[in-house]
Length: 386
Image 1 (cartoon, one colour):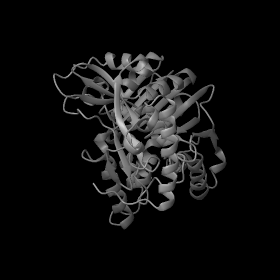
Image 2: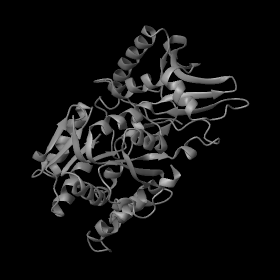
Image 3: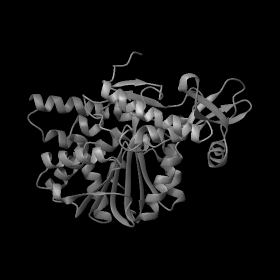
Image 4: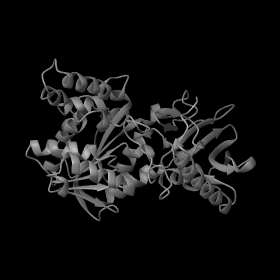
């Protein structure tokens, strides 16, 4: 696939990150894990994909998230957030808030329902995205923007609703190669002329333990490559240690473990995005591409359960939105024959269609101190699949 050419300024920024990565590899004895490479490529201050100035979201960026498509996503999700707050405390934290559109849509809908939270906090690691979120809220909900605060780290204690839309998929993953002779971790080394190349070494430590625990058979020939998202498990455990009462609502694309590690998925799920082009080479222009991996939702459920949380629900995005009344939200729009309604209905089709985001994206709810069933999972719950 031929990718669009970045601007000279963007290429110069990527070149700085390449130099940093080369120095890091040399300092580490010639090899770093792919998780380290991915973390640097995405989050190096000022140079990483989520820490630099590249336009990421929407038609002019590299990908489109659900809130960018239509406010209907946030309007429906507000039903679930409202219920969680009612069963715990009137506080919301959104992790990785993108452009701030979801926060704006949630706040407007909760205001309409007379259920505004006492506080709405955003946990965002990117200073550049913080600025965009502030600008979005100031433009979309100026009368509510003062309710929003930004956190520099996880709170010591929290009760209420935690929302994370497309956060787990951009956490750094370890790449594992199962071969006839054993289990290896795939990392990054330097080849000719300082180019990044794949390099494997026997898996060790926690990475080896987690890979062995999957109990995947070694192939008789060739190799089977996939990902381990140890960062995602640790992130869930950290939140669990702080959650007094409430629920975490995590939305992302992924599978339960039985589907994640299918024999037919022998090259893993790692993908890169550049200007709406998906490709599989994370060494192309580091810092300018999003790098993602699908989520093993069984691992996320296990992390929550082991940390003392209850797994209250697991379903696909379509079922969650329909359970939360997204069709009622659509009906509130302009008359059905209007251009606005037709545009919103098409966007909803993308959010809920089985061959679009409706089936690919899943939602899991991890909770403490909530015994009542959550409305978003009343129909179509797939807990049995985990």
